Structure formats: structure tokens, C-alpha cells
Length: 285
Image 1 (tube, one colour):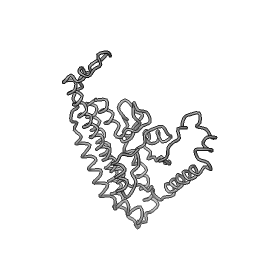
Image 2 (cartoon, rainbow, N blue to C red):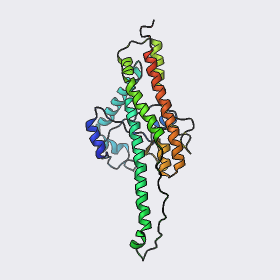
Image 3 (spheres, one colour):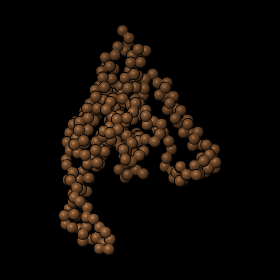
Image 4 (spheres, rainbow, N blue to C red):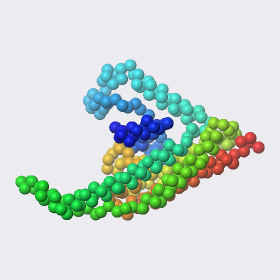
């Protein structure tokens, strides 16, 4: 289901980009309400077979056609188990922030592009209405109501969000050597390790807001949420994206500022981690 751009990126990247999480699984309350970093692992790439949520979605059908011998199930359990062991047994959580900063920049670019596309489409439709295109091409045998012109799509001020994301990317790039050095090269005391680990563990919570999304206060994460009208599917930068989709320009402008402040706070906490590392007395003296 990837676009040509996504396929090209996969070939050029040294790592793999993680897809955004929407809803429909057990991670929903952890990620989108409590702000607990979550990962959903699974196999893909083959046809699902069409049995999901049908009368054929049964143990018998699964063992005969879906996964005879449970080979996929065993491999997936082993993969998840190894990931859990790595997280549980590390002295500190093996987190790094460059991938997240890159993803946030990508989501912002997509939202701006979505607004530009909406503006272009609206202008084209309004021009067709003005030129009476609909009346000329309408079937006289059918009842037809000429669509009304829509309000032109304005240019929103994304600069607060663009500045916040640029600051995040610059900070992540600056502190990467310190975080990597602390994870793999320095010998921390027990107290330092516990403090450092606690700071990392809370980072995802800094991407949430107490007020939550407009009209959906239970959903507190400002980067990921299921669509308000689209079900399981994820909406990135949901407060801004959905305001744009609903043509609520005032709310979109307001949420740009809200989300910018969330990202600024997130960046300041990343910098606090770097400052903690730089100021460590590694020898314990």
C-alpha cells in the first residue's frame, strides 16, 4: 500500500520508518490517553485471504489455511518476546529521538500539503460553478441541484509549528552523541541509571496535553489519534488535520499554537536529558 515516494525512501534509508498507530487494538489507551510509548508488531505483505471478521474466521480455518503449523505465530511470538526482553533487561531504555523528530517533520509537511491540495480543489470547483459547468453538463431528465460555492481556503500561519519542529530536529541532532555515549560507553552509578531511565520513560507523555483533542478530551496525544469520523485509521497531528478537514480555520490556527507549545516542551525535556548526561559524575565522585 506504499506510495512510490515511500518505496523510494525505503531503498535509500539505513533504517525503516515506523508507521503511525491509530486505534482498534490494546495499545489505544496506553499511547493515546496515558502517553506510554507503544509498538505494534505484525507480519504483512501477503493477501489477508478475506476471512477476517467473517464466518470463516475460526480456529479450524486458521490451522488449515491461515497458518498451518503455527509457523508465523511462533515467529511473531519470538520476535515480540525478544523486543520485550531487550526493553526489560536494558540498564536504560534503548530510546533515540532522531526517528521521531524526522517523522514529526514528515507529518507537518503532509498537513501543509493537504491544505494546499484542498485550496487548489476548492478553487477549481468554485470556478466550475461560476462558469455554469454543472448546468451545461447536467442530464435534463434527472433532478439536479447546483452545488454552492465554498469559502476559499486561506493560507494558515504554520510558522510557530515549523519553528518548533526545526528546533526539535536541531536539538536531537546536537544531543545524539551524548545520548549514544551514555547508553553504550559510560559506566553510570545505580542512582544515575535510575534517574536517566525515568527521564526516558516519561518522554512520550510530553507529547500529550491535559486538555486533549478538541471535542475528544480522552485522546490526549497530539501526534497520533484515530480519526474522529474515520474509525481505526490514524490521523497524524490530529487536532490540526481534522480542523482543516472540517474547514474550521479558527480552530486550526489555535491548534497550531497548542501543538507548537507541546513540541517545544518535548524539545526542552530532550535537552534536559542531554544536560543531565553532560553533567554526570560518571566516576561517582
